[in-house]
Length: 144
Image 1 (cartoon, rainbow, N blue to C red):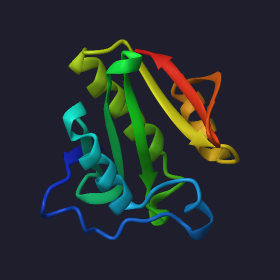
Image 2 (tube, rainbow, N blue to C red):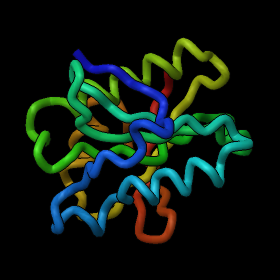
Image 3 (cartoon, rainbow, N blue to C red):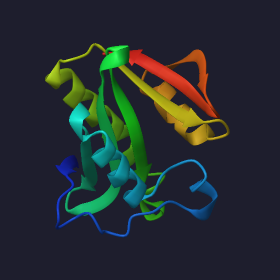
């Protein structure tokens, strides 16, 4: 069972990471925490993703008032836990949290061109490409 737990002093240094091949596509835990801090005034929510009592990944989202949407900024599943459906389950759970919060009716995210695993995951969850780019990142969105 997937659970989302706020990052706190007891769980922020769990050593979760992706493979070397994936590092060009996603931030590590420290990068995620830095972004959470930078967006703290936008209700950033940084979480550790657990399957039962095992930490399997991390995620971050925050409010993007200028686009009237949630920004699903970061998601990664640890290299040792990939391929087990945790990314899909965690994304679904995060989207449910956004719906429950109810502040916005849309979610935006970006993925780096070439990260086919991320594109496939997000498409499976209902996101679609907007046709916009943000540097080397492809913008996707979905209505909640």
